[in-house]
Image 1 (cartoon, helix red, strand yellow):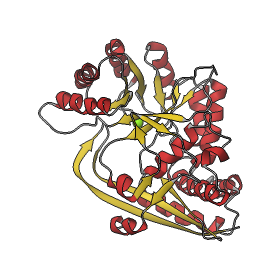
Image 2: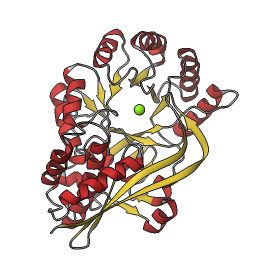
Image 3: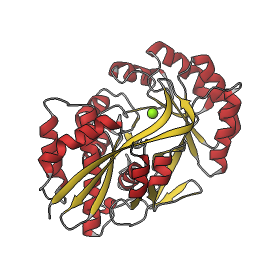
Image 4: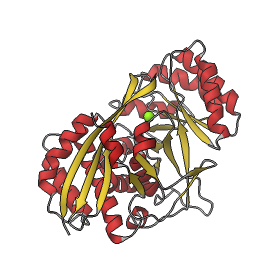
Length: 375
Ligand code: MG
């Protein structure tokens, strides 16, 4: 069995309505999908998180070194890709390219062996995953707090027991909007906030003090991912759990977050942090440090399924008879590339995803629609 070919596609979709967060505005969605074909004709799909055209360049660069290798030997293939990029890109977009190929290889491996990826990772430890709804972005409207409160209600009515909203405009606006959302969803729905590293330590501390009475399940990327010490200091200053890691790469990067006591919740993005091969190792490292793992996702159903399959296998620390729910992130913002091009054979019912045993990642990809979205 050999890897016969690796193809990459940049898909672009212009949004009906743009939205923004603390750093920039989204008017389009773009993703690099990767198709790996094995010598027996089996096809697997992956995707990279990050600027799609750059991810594509990385995938096309890496392909020459791994075509001809055995697609079942995911760790061996990963090592070749890592060695070929280490001297130039210990972190960043080339790791996203590795991730995209790696995820596709796990899909290929599962289909060849007729097994779901979670079983190949060691077996599922739960049959249900609890996705939290990600949405509640900023938009230009006369009363944003009111609009966010109404959006939050739609997630609660759909059965989501947890959701995440953006903060990071100004502390004053954050307080107003978080209060409005908390009021709209009541006390029983978990509410997380995400600043995308908009604040310095002083601002983040002050905001935490104001938001602590609102029962915030975690504060994500409160400060710059470069400031490990500020993460650790903020953890000491507030009772709100601190989350981060979507800008972190491989176990070598996460080691800094863990050893520095920076986070309560680690959020590796499987499609940028090194693929399923590396995310499994990051989860093991998190366990060593007693840190919870809730995968970050921002992409198509390929990324979502990779997160479900990993999340099904994760250990909780410490173990106990009645385990806490395992969450993954489920982006609910407009994304035709997710909803049209890829079909997840998993469904979300009353805020719960049942883990099934589809071979590979269990995602169908419409190649005709890929042509529509490739510019
Ligand atoms: Mg985030």
